[in-house]
Image 1: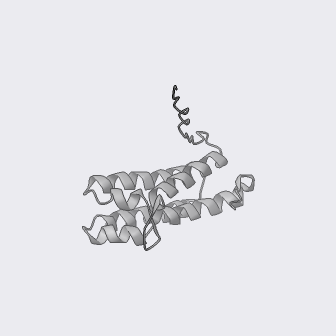
Image 2: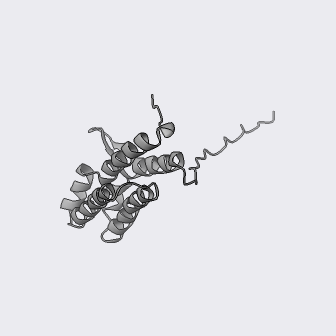
Image 3: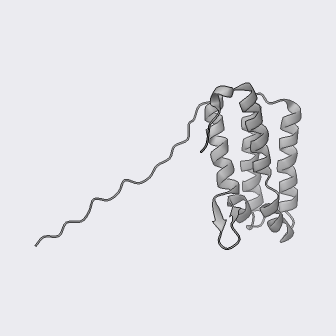
Length: 140
């Protein structure tokens, strides 16, 4: 009796929109924030953790990478035309996260508590919802 192998499942793919329209920016920034701040949950304590906290454990290089990814969110906000004071606030969040993250051990713990990318996402989404209401996403 000949045994056949079941068909291999198709690999799951996820592509982000590449446009400069507010809906595309929203999708990219939300996905980036989720990856940086809430990729998985620590078992037992049910605390969401992302790449920001994990990559930040690598001295110097980790801080550079996470700062660049946080700065990308600010850059997207600038391209959408956020007011300078909101951009300054977002930049200050990234700068504070970077400065605290540079302190050995203390900075790694602070990455779990101070989530600059989440704060910046809230600022950006509030602006998008007000000025581009057609991009709102109802999550259920």
